[in-house]
Image 1 (cartoon, one colour):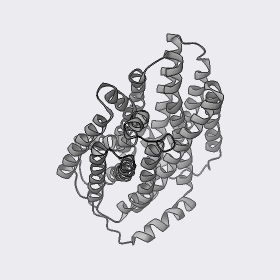
Image 2 (cartoon, rainbow, N blue to C red):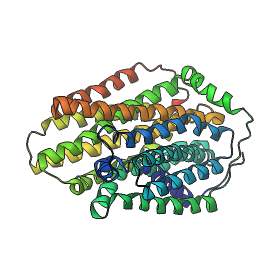
Image 3 (tube, helix red, strand yellow):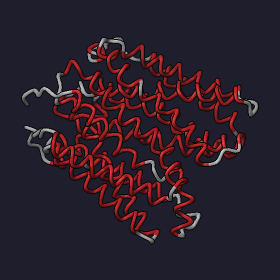
Image 4 (cartoon, rainbow, N blue to C red):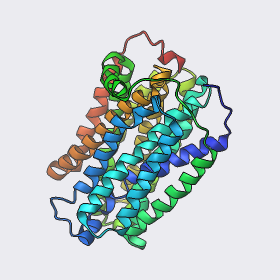
Length: 397
């Protein structure tokens, strides 16, 4: 494909699109109880709201994102956005819990278009800029992940839960128009069959050591991230008597983590990937250990928790950029499949972190959750130390 010179404005648009799209995976999480009460969900079925969204997203990563290796990327992204918009309209209009669940699945499925945007950005720029470009685009995606929950809580508290999805539908419509108008088409020259593409994903995971390692590193860190942000709002409500809107304000500290993405992307381009990954694990360890010092309800403890949250967000977002800048250099023609494998394992780690974090906190409390949380990055750090000295691909970053 001929190299295209794209402005910083285009990078900003792609970053904004990623954030707005992926935020739809998280809007419902902090307001599940409100939605469940309004639509008469039973206690046993209300968890399906998040579950079906995540299932839709996981299936999209496996069966839709790899299509970007053989199909025109812009059309795939637009198709995904239309699916998301359709799902949002259904959510806003429905009064049926069953229909709501079906719409949640569609939103998860269509939101995988964000994972086509990221590798597309690297295809539109010079290879030597991979880390920088990924860092800039991923900062938008990470902002979407980090802001979705507090924004949802805030809008729902001020207006109502349907207003959250109305707002999202408006943003998706705007992004849809902008992408149709300004993003160039990127036609793949490969002519493989769809089934051969899907079949090759398992083989890629088995054959590519870097893909396995980077997927594992990021799954561990994103599991920690999800664990922390699943139990911390509960801890704040219990120990500081904060309401949903006040907890949402605390959630905005996550914005700072996205600032690490473009910085780390530039450092990765200069050959510091392995050192930065080890640093990310060390920061995560100390972030969780610091939270063991939160023994009272003072402002100093709240300040310490805030610093811990910022440090953890920096570690997770920074290492994500490093991982993607490395895996995209494995095979230029398989970026869609590689990203599908990487992000599937990435979000699996997040799902497990949320589940077990909540389980540990409910049964053993905050201290136990922080101790176990501090051990997880130790495993990642030890695994990193076993990495071979042959870093031909990594040294390019």
